[in-house]
Length: 270
Image (cartoon, rainbow, N blue to C red; front, side, top):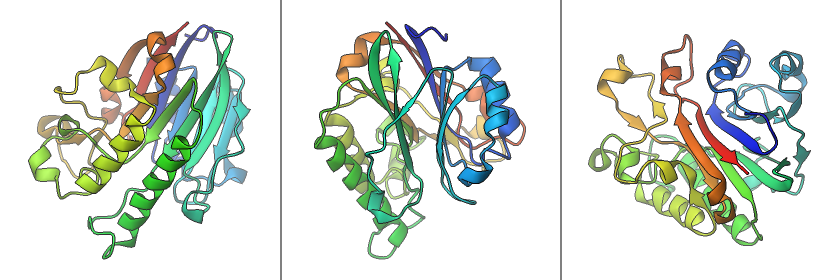
């Protein structure tokens, strides 16, 4: 990859960039992405490890972070133009969205990187303010995109919702578990269906299991395989013909001191 006519984009909830910085080099070796979108970087902007990331070949970086929580970043081998007209979602200032544009095949592509709130443990917006925040965030984001003309747009990130039955290890058992409840899944699918295509499911049919996250609580995550697809890549329909491949780097779940999420890559060709 690397040519402006071919592009590999990776999304990964790294769960602390500074703690897992060495794993970025391994990601580069294993997947060779042109652009990496990170979530849950947990680093304030003043301490962002720009030089270490430049040493990996990602000389164009955009980041929005805070101490200990949240944080998003875009690391790129190709030039990025920041998009500065994005909202302060729910008026929280909590560093959950960053966006940029880049050139693919001589045409501009907009790239949005999201980290949606997890929502706590109780799926009741009245009893749980974190869950209320999550639903409000998705509602705001869906409305914002619905009010725009979205052309040649890619949306990636840890959306913290597994919307389809085969996006979780047990649809029946997780219907009352935050990340797969109907108030979440219906909202996320409505947002997606109003202008986007699920790029991962373009390659893996909706009736096949597909996961990107396995809990730290599972002693042997591979044996139990109680996964969820919380990480997503969406595209506008005008990019569908340029889709060339998709990879869920499941082996990354076994890397030392790794995240509970694994990287997901989508390839585009002009």
